[in-house]
Image (tube, rainbow, N blue to C red; front, side, top):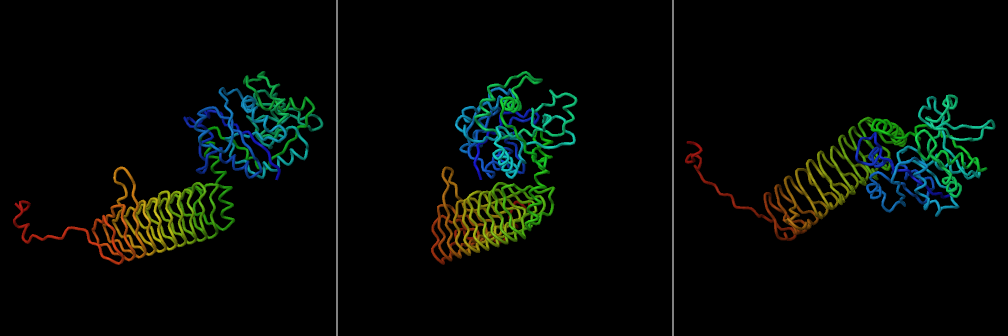
Length: 458
């Protein structure tokens, strides 16, 4: 797979989104739009990126930090102007092909980019335009060809004649260029058009007029090239993305009970025989093993689950969950948790930066933070690790087969040794020895006949 470089246009304000957030950072199935584009580029062989930023550029820079170079477009003077801002990047890739893409066209696939690049290289083209056929091409630039069928120029809607508006082959806004040919063409761009902007499309005409080879690659699925200008289009594209991703998952053996209420990241991996119940959100690089039942009303983000997990009406983030684990309902697994096989995190349990050994159970109504629990531990109802002293967080260690009774406070740092037993209602501040019983509560006192003498009865 031959490498190429790419320039991503991401400087626009996205006025119609009605937001202070840059358009390319809006999420599609929980993944930012520009990340969809970068994923497709990487999978197709692109190596070396420059993102042209403008509006709220620091937010985009922060999001893409370490992934690419940046060029700044201070004024929004058209696509040609945006590419002009990346001249220094082009000079470093003079002997390569360079793709030009928009950061708000998320459904383009790596297969399309790979095939278009192969066409560009095999034809020895100086410029290759990815095109598509549309029954109603209103608003798109048209591919004007000469009598021999060769590309003559790209005509924008506002500049097109009535005859040119009848052309059904449109410019998708995605290109491959020889970097040196593009650099030379940029010097010839002018603003003598209806919008007084520098059109990148004019670079194609300049290359052709100078004797360069201009090729096209027609994409079969026009939905790949759907851009996003407002939130209504974002929703429409999300439906297209769902259909693509969910169909592939179901064909691979995953059951999705309700596509309309489910959100699954394109980066998620789900093994066969897993069932995704309604109102489930699976975000990031979550990986789910075979034979799980997820949901209803579940949220998973960057979580790895083993096989046979039941995850009911709960949330988990940046953690690892082993095989045959039962979670929920209404539990919260915060980042940094590692739950071994055959464990239970029951109803209304919250855990954070905690490790469970095999077979450990926290059935309900507990908080476990900054802790390490061995195997076979029972962490009963109403118990908490008191991990924060107002300034620092402290660790709790509970070793194998310890039994923590109901309504116990474990004031960290503290250790409960193997097989120890803590009586219900205790507040533990010191190490509990192996196989010992710890009781830390006031002795019960009974006052016979107290109510008869109480003022409450008078």
